[in-house]
Length: 103
Picture (cartoon, rainbow, N blue to C red):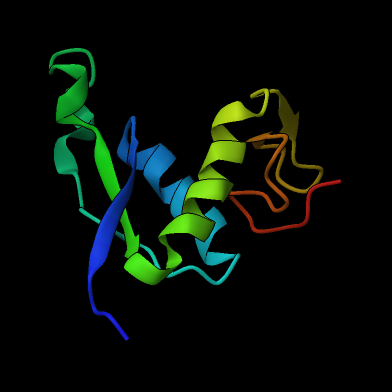
């Protein structure tokens, strides 16, 4: 089995990266991401300075890419968690904030 990892996605910022990492991990895909502490510079730094790369093992790349393609192609409508009232994307099954199942 290969120990190699590939970049599967460049998230716009560390927040999106964490959300996508959680989505992939919920599908039993191993994910690694760089820690990006530059989020505080939003608005002052070029957009690519806060991009955050997500990496997956080579053998899980195709499966991860399919999930990310669905994410990119879905309409990014939002719903609110009935438990904590946090805003979530409609393609999320659980609230990113409190972990409760979204209805």
